[in-house]
Image (cartoon, rainbow, N blue to C red):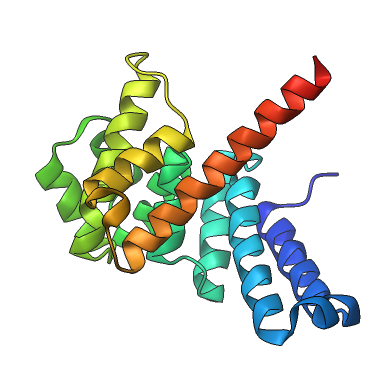
Length: 197
């Protein structure tokens, strides 16, 4: 039996909340750090959850995230950085009230001006548009076989769009965080491959 994505997300959040209040975790980290670590872990796990979610379940998961207040601009930026373009499109459909065929067509080949209008209608701040467009263009190239890239490369190019490593502000901090997570994950994968050889 496969639980719907919104139920799996709810279980994920409940597990995080239980761990956060565990006496061992509280003793090791303290309340504030445990809260922050749990929040970050749940966001990362939510992005991972999308990988195993069928497209027909996206609407229910998006509504669940929206009602919880978790369908934020930072979450959407994280999803597009990770190449979850279908989920990102489903979120734009829900937030902008545009038709699904229109949103899909824009994501697949729309010009910047049309995409920015879509992002605005979905409530995404103008400051986020450039990095989202950058990620979207790279994932288009990957989908069309013109480029080989992963989260590490995409997040690096998103960061360059903001001015590189010296960029400051909440958006830059988010993109740096995504990039560092991707670097760590790739390093972990390489270490495991070397150990297995």
